[in-house]
Image 1 (cartoon, rainbow, N blue to C red):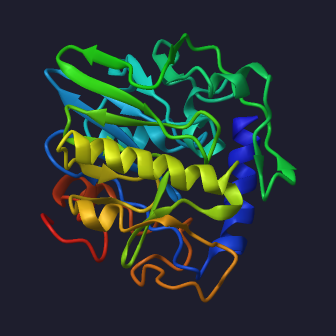
Image 2: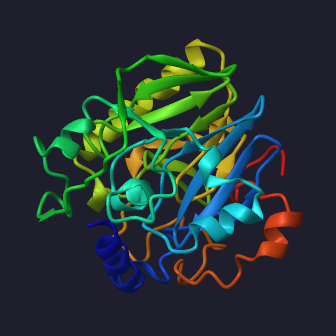
Image 3: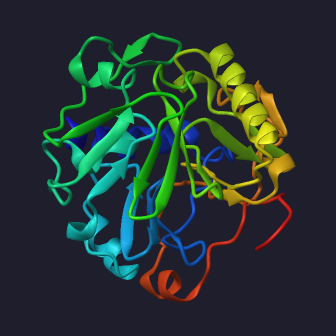
Length: 294
């Protein structure tokens, strides 16, 4: 169902969200020497490379230009053996669903054991305040099921797996080498900092806020200030900015919501600004409003 769901979102989502300043995806390119990014409409997927090993974080839409854009970064899909899934929504798993191009047919998928219940059909994913059920995700890839606090090692790449339920029941974020936090759909960056992600897409908004508070406290306790990298609104090294408003939810129903991101594209599905030349020559800058390194 991923191809049909991706095509549906490409048609419907611009009508719902254009002009609201909600989505500010990064273009395709490199954030730094370790983290590469690919833009798929309003969503970003990421690649982390170290010690001649590349792991992938989320699998995006069922997206026809994925192989092409990976070539801009010099990454061969066959080299990707491990894919960390934050959650199983259409825009995060499309490239590993059964009707995809199967670029990663030999890669292992890592996701929380709670999130896996969506894939088995035990639980159905609901959005729009539980009024709409999403299609069931189907994949043939081998799965590794994770618990909160599990630590993985991929040829010297340390990955700490942290359960942050709310957007989905089993959503995970991944802390890599204690320096990069891939947050999927838990955080939304507005002009004045991070909020709990979009209200109409959450299983439980109150749980989302509690989960973010727990995550923030864990990072504080461990004296960690990682780069925070989101699925739809870019990245920041400004810890205070990233967690500034996690007790509030991004309300996508308010056209006049403030603060939106004034630099967000009017239509996030317009990819005309995402080019190979830029991907090869320009480093991807931090989120609007955040301090720290560019």
